[in-house]
Amino acid sequence: MRAADVGDPVMGRLVAQYGAPEAAAAIRARALPSDFAAQEARHERPPDLTRRLNAWYARLATAKPAADLESGEKAGARLIIPGSQEWPTQLDQLGPSRPLGLWLHGTADLRFACLKSVAVVGARAATSYGSHIAAQFGVGLSESGWTVVSGGAYGVDGAAHKGALASDAPTVAVLACGVDVCYPSSHDTLFAAVRERGVVISECPPGVHPTRARFLIRNRLIAALSRGTVVVEAALRSGALNTAAHALSLNRHLGAVPGPITSSMSAGCHRLLRERKAVCVTTPEEMIDLVGVIGDDLAPQSRVAAVSRDKLNDSTKRVLDAVPARGGAGPASIAVAAGVSLDVTLSALGGLAAAGYIERAANGWRLRKPATSYRKAPESTALQPPPTAEAAGQADDPPFPDDLPVPYQAAGRMDA
Image 1 (cartoon, rainbow, N blue to C red):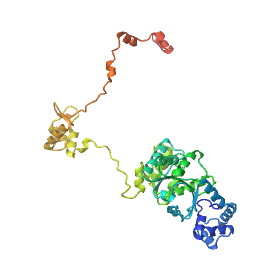
Image 2 (image 1 turned 60 degrees about the vertical axis):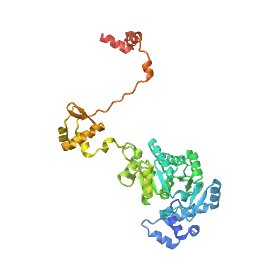
Image 3 (image 1 turned 135 degrees about the vertical axis):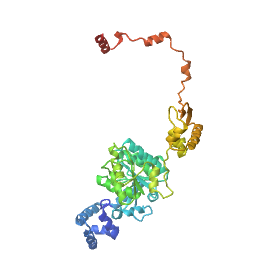
Image 4 (image 1 turned 45 degrees about the vertical axis):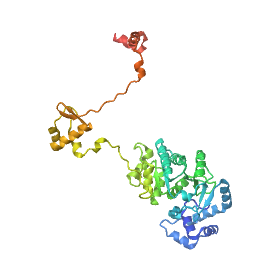
């Protein structure tokens, strides 16, 4: 983990084929197995093994694994590797890019917490709309028993973690630095709450600070740990779209929250929807419906409010549409306009009149006007005496010219 960069596929293939002890011994001897070198040379873009081996050797020579374990233990962190009881098996789908190990700092069991998890990602420079939606998703997912996975950054990530913590549920924060490094520094309180109820994870050893490349590489872990990813808000150039790409490559569910078409911070979500790479989700229930079990996690269907007119049959609706709003019309005229028989019209008119839809007029039938309700004046107003004549006269007297502002005085003289 100290010798190679995070997510190095060449080191991943070396460890997977020969094991970690033999790989470390080969690096110290500065001689990779010949069959491994021949295998790497057959790739479409063969890596420069000499350059990589020299870099691995230089880093391994200065590495102090015992000191890393000691510093991690002092910080309260623990190290897990593939095969550990707490190791999430879904990370194996990353293939050669699977992390060699993970540092964990927190009370939650990572494997158990990620059994039902959703990644909530988005822009760091999120708008108030994006932060509100992210917090809403964090609360809704957590209350339904789903763990929120995110990157602990500003904007959408932080809002999603806070929403999950507000529901007293565990949340997983995937960092691009060591678990003992607080980045961003202003999230020290947030990370402390995550450690208390959830877990902070990283594949970087203790003391490692973040870089731009590590942020993009760690996104694959966010996508791999969860059953699906929802992009709340993202510009056209956003790290959240990188997480979405990892989710698609892993055949995971991908959702996107639409935003205002005038907002550049939602342009990335709109592109995902337009290219049909993501499913439109607007509520936590819809995201659970996307990633949950068929038949068990269905989202409720949105229905419009029913009105009394919806209960009328087709012929009665046609008769009602044919009744004029003003004046009046006879049953024969209404029957012709509605396109139904006179018997049906007479039956419908009787029912509509009884229900209060129509009323009799001098010329036949017309629509009944809805009763207009007026707000009642407060009783205190009725108890107040009317203004006196003197008060009314003082209020209604026009001002003297000398009392007017200068522009009005000048205008008055010009008019005169």
